Figure 1: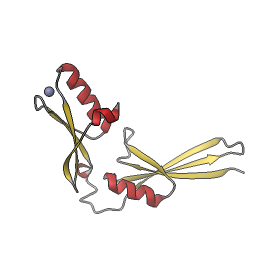
Figure 2: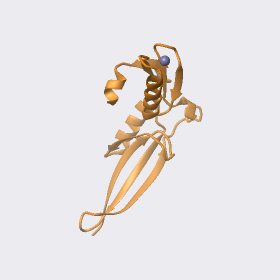
Figure 3: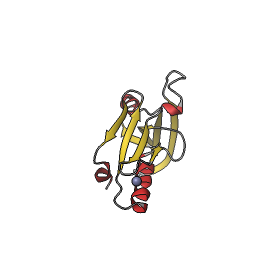
Figure 4: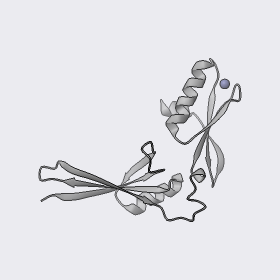
Length: 137
Ligand SMILES: [Zn+2]
């Protein structure tokens, strides 16, 4: 008999290039983490597992977290700010990898410049993430 395996991810949008975080076994866990990250969607994955433990089918369903219309605005989502400590050039990004790419290009084009990363959330404002290039490496 086939059976169903369900898990949950927190995600920041329903687009293809979205950030996902997880998996979680329960919706409550995923929802808690999503709120912490400022994400507005949950993704429910269903794997239909066949007799030989093979995945026969994958279904995924997006769920928007119930919130007021003001906070559902995508501009309210966590933003990443990169700013070069040397020349002051800066940019805003939605995703970690975009910040990383921006920093890589900037530091490649301007030798000895050092890019700093800041995270902006509604709750905490702008906060620097130290040693972030080391974390990514
Ligand atoms: Zn610079």
